[in-house]
Amino acid sequence: MISKNTYNMIKTWVYRNARDIELSLWKYYFENGSKEDIISALSYFQNDDGGFGNSLEPDNWNPNSTPYTTLYAISVLNDIEFIDLNHPIYKGILKYLYSENDLMEYGWRFCVPSNDEFPHAPWWNFNEEANLTESIGVTAGLSIFVLNYADRSSILYQKTIALVKNLMNNLLSGNSSGDMGIGGYVKLINALKKLKFDEYDYTSLQLRLNDLVRNSIENDISKWQYYCVRPSNYISSPQSIYYNENKDIVEKEINYLIETIPQNDVWGITWTWFDNNSKYSKEFAISENWWKSNKAIENMRFLKNFGYIEV
Image 1: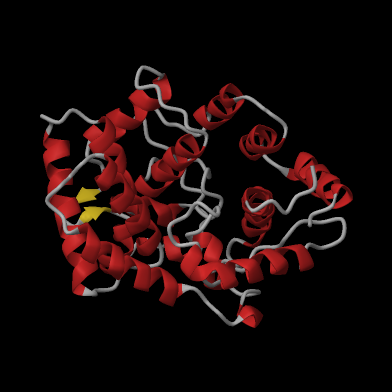
Image 2: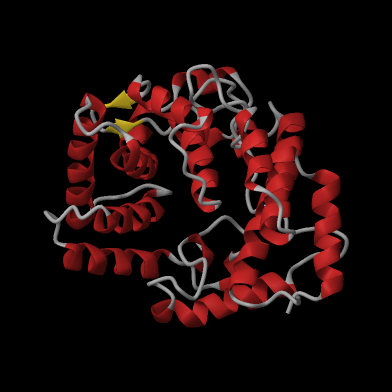
């Protein structure tokens, strides 16, 4: 269990180090904080075009709106279950998506050209060839938003229908899905079922996805100190459809998190900016601290959902 003393240690660290956006999320998930405070903090990262940038995703300091950073903001809204199409933050996101900025034939770009002008991790270097694969996750995520909230008569909606069809074909064909593609598919298939898109063979799609989830999880715990896929990438609570098949490795991650929490600190991140470290050493140090707050919240939510935090 995460004891009360350990919980208070983590809380103190977050209060001392987090940005307003992460601090408001901490308060919401663990202290009955308000959604309004999260929305207010999130709005400062939104641009006039309705998209998001401005280092909301800590590894990319591009102030311009990008598809991935906009999806990052959407994920925050989804997690706190805030839906209000009349709210300026939602109107802005729809405005950005209707503009079709960085929407290509294959989907929304993962990395965009203007990333190269600002401090960033190397995976945010603009690379159109890499986008062909790495776009899968962001395209899946933004497609869910469009299918749920965009005008069904719009060109954007029709383009998204075609993109989703291509994604489903790609999933069954066994082609690569990129770094965040499997997670994108997990959410997309769930959304398509809820929206009653009946033209897909969900039995085959789900079986394929079950295999991808299981096989992508790193089972060698000694490698978890490095960047790799852990069960929590896909399984956030016992209610997950992937939990029973992966129960043993989920329990190992729970134990791992409890055993590796540092004294008077929070969990570190498992990556650096690698080739960009020397060029952006100061910016990476700041990014690392932002991420630590983010990961503290993520890990504590995971442990809370499985009942491993003392109350």
